[in-house]
Image (cartoon, rainbow, N blue to C red; front, side, top):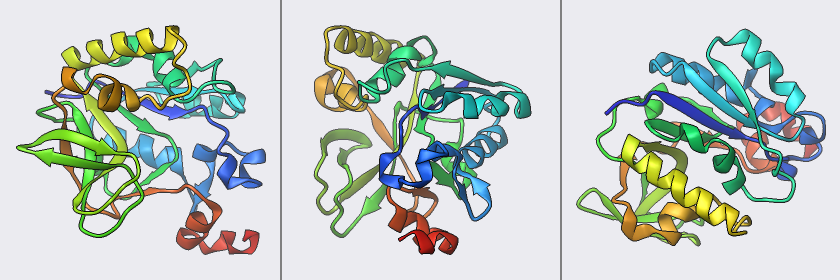
Length: 234
């Protein structure tokens, strides 16, 4: 199977990176001279995925230049971003989930291969974690995700915010997202839907990657550790 389109979630306020994000949406912050979202767009294009949908909300007007700079980039507004969790971002992109790669916009891509368009099974990018982690941790057997721990642990695959969805699974995910969102279950992460709400209706796998291929930046401390120019803000 091959990915045809990408959905990048970029609607949130990024409050853990205040005061930077008071003026600049988190995905547009430069890290060592490169905007996080541009590292994603570049990697997607290198993998032959030119159809890109960016979900915007907070300071949405500041993303407009991307559509003029990068052919194939489109913006989709999430009007619910202030009152709902990121399930709302998949709700507004529900028509694009088939044959799609879905990812957060606040990641820095060091290895473009992590966004490779070829895949055999719907599922998540993940890296083996031998030691302790507080990130979501997957238990995998026979190439299929058996369970997920929100509180982390040891000896499992750390989930990264990059996932691929086949035509069939994307359609199923869209239906589940719509049902949960419209019944008022708006405070959950979208990943809760396939991993916790309907785990028996998917046979998700992983695409194994190495730690360090992607930087997920969740705080000023993590940002400063990668780009020392931000150390003065600590």
